[in-house]
Image 1 (tube, rainbow, N blue to C red):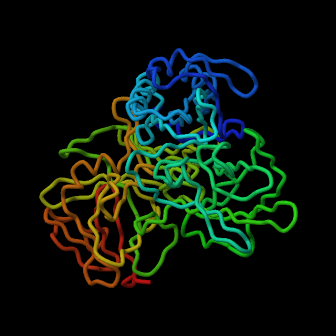
Image 2 (tube, rainbow, N blue to C red; image 1 turned 30 degrees about the horizontal axis):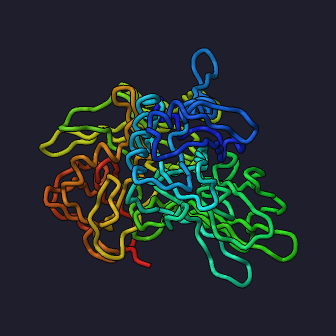
Length: 492
């Protein structure tokens, strides 16, 4: 497993949910090099550190994994940080880019390319003029410029008042949930955390929304914790909102009730991915079932002899950075293996329930397809309400395609000792193919100017067609996914 893949697999530590340190510097006269390596920062317990680099070295997470010699651990740095100051600086964007490059250069082997290293400067109206605060940790996520959230986090009062979303500083940008985001720490005021909601509370609060125990259902994997730091006072109770809202397991979502003294209560509600193209977890009429993953190839040559599919406790593809990975089905040099992340060991019995099928393609050789021996699904896709172009690489905020960029968090390959998502690998060529997915209820399923591979049943060979009919039982090779059409025409 590539080190770049490890950053997503740690168990969150409450003490690392949000860390902040303060330095007294003049931003207008301070270089990125000084902020990174020379400025003196002090944390809440009085410890001093020289530069952002030393903070990231001291406060980091660890990933544990099994080897032939036992369980070992790897230190994984936090690659995202917020710099909050009341000074303002016309150089902030330049400083953001330069500090991020320094982090990537120093810890290149440990930075997941799907997450990267990012720095964001925010205005802090209550900060002392010469104070610069740095916030980082499990719950600190910096979205890319122009990036839109794929999921939602809402705070809704149980009573009078309207719902709010946590925002980042004075930017007004939603604080979550973004494509590669794993957690969110937010407070009741801007001086408690970079992400906050303007909430009229008698005492400040600070919440961490992040991955919980593996014993939680795979479709509701997160927990909410109250943090006692940065001046917050956790004088409240938190519980899951049952039985008022019981998810059916089709999406990764949940909600919690926070109760303060008296009758002041509100909900914290999240959904990991709200897009129509998100991975679904339950069979419905007219959906596509994902019944296989295609061996990664480029120009008809294998790009890696080590690639894998990540599954949750229900043997569904993870499909989100928030979803806990229970096992990985890996192909190494053509052999199928299963790695169990709970026991840090290989599971040969489970590995035998998967196979690498060699499927013929008329005039084009063959496809390697990783599938279950019983042909069961890894997840499902809903047909859109209107026809949409299909893409595999994260789209910018000017388009609204049927984006399958979540595949990067469900399947990957090791390329030159670095993890690459299968969606990104396939998208390099497929995003130019102009594949269009049919709306629900149409008698065709997809079209492509360059042709889409289709077979009417599993015992036939694949063949390229410009238009694919909607034919239950038929299979389509759409990038790295093998889709099987279910009975029904779809629709809401």
